[in-house]
Picture 1 (spheres, rainbow, N blue to C red):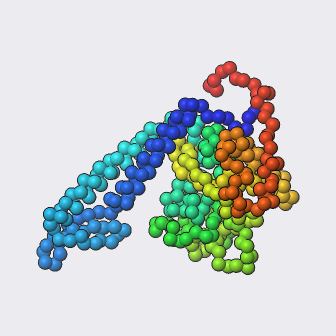
Picture 2: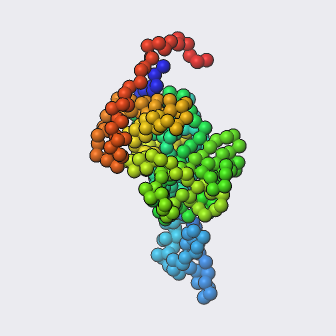
Picture 3: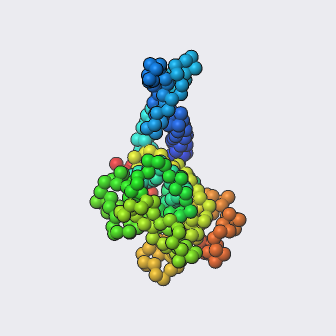
Length: 354
């Protein structure tokens, strides 16, 4: 059967509705958190006068003694916060209403645990800055960009690969990011996550779901200055260096709103699909790669190249934005030919899947 299927007009409409509702929700939530976080109240000082205080991040700061001006600030804060809170709540309910429809229309694609991990990374300011999703899970972005669903066999996975960009700044990480780093974040999502080895790059939960933290091999192999982890905690994951990943780190990035298995949207960031296809084809040619993985690598490379060729023609393998990739890698592009389609042999069903 075909390696991908076009979305129907109804599915596309539903996706657009969900993405628009999610965008408005995110903007409204951001406004609520930035403008109306903390609290505001009157407190008496030593001279028995009322002073207006604003609490942000656990710290109280005086805004001045009671006056017409501070009373106006107090009233505007509480009125605005209630209005903003009501708006965010209403938009959250709208996403709750859209979720079962998304599931019924088979739009929920991203495994639930993967989605929770990506959301947590995004909330901490890491997705698209310090970390990108790579490997099989990146296909969810590419299929959304192309408006198709890729065949389930090519998407099936029980792990997620997180590519660390060691150039990231610690200032980008939110203050509520656990001092235990990535391991602490995973354990907040599922307490059964545990590192598979001391100073290792993998963590697994009780169901065998794996999280891999990987990074490119540095140009200077003797360098000890590159970041390999998010904290100094002894149990935190330490990224393993893998050849070829520098091509993905240095490639353009793409992002999209995708839908998880429960029907809820999330932001996703990963390397450009052209870099993915070239890297996967390169992997499929490596003699030290597991034979079964080489077959899947080539299939994934060619399906993504097919999406680029037929659905994303604005992405060219000859474009200047791929100049960071080695010439030898870019020269593999002509080998990303089409996969034979056996749609003609597919038997059409005349009954619903009761």
